[in-house]
Length: 356
Image 1 (cartoon, one colour):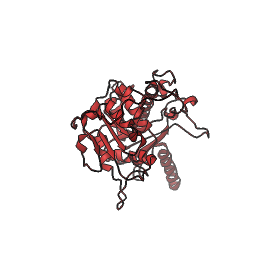
Image 2 (cartoon, one colour):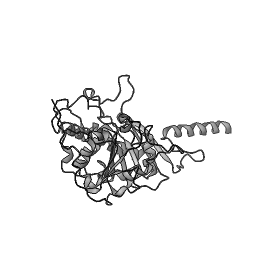
Image 3 (cartoon, helix red, strand yellow):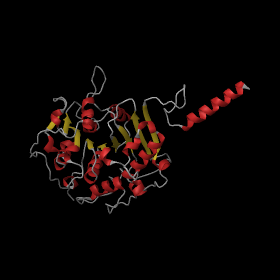
Image 4 (cartoon, one colour):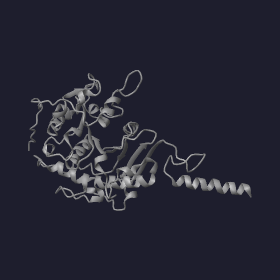
């Protein structure tokens, strides 16, 4: 009889284990949850039944093979003293980046939002000056800013981030995700949000921050939209909160797309363009950082070289990333510590016209 009870207890234990997110139990006490890094991945459609697909702009719930296309990611490390900031990453999931952000004491999520419309919409030549910016804003907010797309609120980045954080607050109370909900619990507290991305994601991050005040904007290899002028619009987010990092062989840099956006965003008011290979932290407190490390003359490699990954610079002896201090600076440097203003660069082409 005792053996039977032991079997029942073990069975119940595993039922409890299977019902909890990863990392929620240990062998000694199923209710004891040690400080650790918690990682999550879940479909947007599993969190919110209102989620839908927009095939015309390749914004899908399931791909052509029927596989989930709306997977979202999150992580937090409760062993690290928290900074009280949530990073929303607007590009493909990068586990190595997430690990670093967690090590800085930051919470981080990646939400599924419309980011594959670029080769489908705004194809007129020349394109109108607000076309791409308006689509970015509609994809981010779920509000009607563009005539080319119709994205409902539940499918905008803002609502998906809110629903995800609300789910995390319930599923992972150890992570204290609750702090990122507003007082009314009907949205996020955007003053605690760092909006960030690379390439396309960095451009949408900047466009969103123009509209919505956030704690910080971190733009890797971007922003672009060189034929648009939304970058010069009044900004809800103070200009000293924008940070950028690019490789000088990235085609967006060599064609003056990034330097143009950085100046239109007002980043030159807070320090010069600083080459991180020749300057130590805090990089003259600048918001405009570049690198020129050897990528073999490969512009595509240069484009992805400013975030953790196979193209990032590594120490040939230790194998460790060389830009650890740069990423830390971009996401945690106090925004009230600023560099000296510099005049606009006459060599950076600000007026870029698209030929029909």
